[in-house]
Structure formats: structure tokens, C-alpha cells
Image (cartoon, rainbow, N blue to C red; front, side):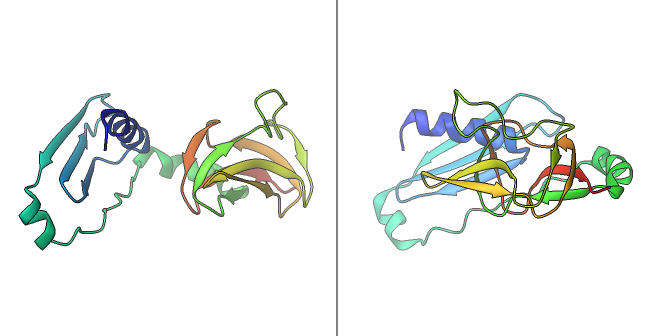
Length: 160
């Protein structure tokens, strides 16, 4: 793992809101801790493991921290009348089919069943995400070119 990959990992962890991530590979152990109070700081601990020890100990699974925001509870009360469109896969969210094209939908766009809402790139494949409902886009919950998780909310739609 080179320094560029480590820097990208730190940025990804900081964006995700996770407070701590541990990663163990054959000869390296990485722990990334971020400030919990919206601080932009990240602490990274790199540790080289001697080869004899690395061969004896199996690598544990990477823990995924769940992020809970108290401010979201109040916002969800207002949004309860809307339908949430969630990501069906893990990948990178794109609002446009390509950089030189316009976005698929904007806030206020009227959509119908089968309309393409966005594209999610997963393993170099671009998957069009189609609407399963008709309505009006009220809110776009993810920034363009951001990583998304399975079942992560992407759009709020007013079905009326």
C-alpha cells in the first residue's frame, strides 16, 4: 500500500463520518481515527508487522462503523410524507451520464416510473438507477461523485 492509497483512505473515512477504522493486511496495520465533533483532523497509525507474526495471525474483518446523527431525527419527521429512493448497490454516485452532459434530475423535477435518476459506478460498470415510483424530486441527499453504500438514501420524492 503506497502513500497515495493511504491518503485516499483517510479522505474516504473522514467523509464517511466513521470515528475509527482499523485495517490489517499482510505486513501492515493501519488505524484511522477522526474527530467526532465535525473536526477535519484525522489520526493515522501505521505499524509494520514482522513477517513471522503476519503469517501466524489471520487478518480480521474490517469493522464498519455506523453513523448516527441526532439532527437527522428532527429532519425525518418533516420528511415522513416523502418516499425515499435508496441505493441498490455500493459504488460512486453520479448525477450525470457523463461529465459533458446535463444532470438526470434536479430538485423540483417531475419523474415517472422507469425514469433514470442517476448512475452508480461499481467496479468500472455504470449502473443506471431507475425510478420505481412517480412523483416530484424534493431533495437530493448525495453529492455528485460521492461514494454510496447499499440502502443509503439518495432522493426524497413527493408521490402526490
